[in-house]
Length: 264
Image 1: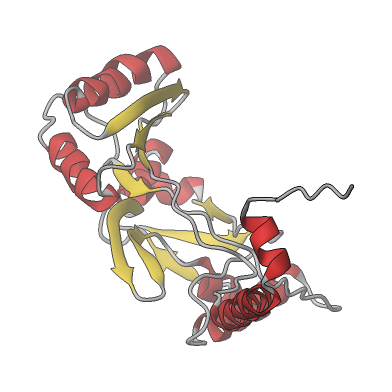
Image 2: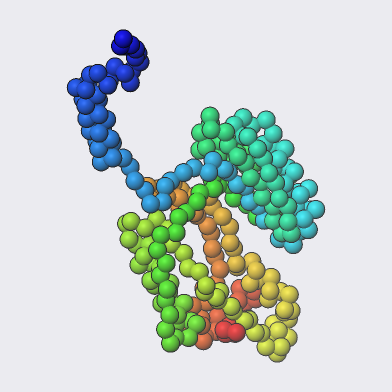
């Protein structure tokens, strides 16, 4: 006596219909090949941090003063703003920052504009604070490292590095480049004691004149096709030509008063 058990199900059906199984397999293979040839591949994938950062400097202030004069006032101005998932604040000596995490349901640029508008309406910041810097946090991927070395002094090596940096930034494919490991220029201002007595000046007045001529202020950012361009006012004395010629430069205090500038 022979017993025959009838099997049911999609697998059983394909086992008895080999043509349909082969056609389905061919369709899956062709679909996979077409997808593999058109899929977007990135070595450094782009992604949004959906984070806005507010930085504000208060030179010489203690962390408690920064918290009371800057951080708390910024937090109060942003209370009730829709689209913010989380707000974190840090107050440290001379500066404070507020970090905002934006919800995925809201556009980051719209929230960024609203945050700028609200902070601009704050009129109770104390004197001596710098303009707040409000920006979207963006992560830049490091692609290429260029090492520059040679038997040169620090000034010549820094000048050569700056020249190479400008050439790299001129490339249309490059949106951002920076220099690491270099040393900042340092300027020594020396005023003869006889000159101070002759014009009735003090070192405090000379220092105040230099400080007034050195303006470093953020001016926001501009979005371009290649990325974000930061704007900043830098009206500081440029040391490169002074160091190269070892000349003297006038100080804007009283007529006829000069000070000598030399690298230290």
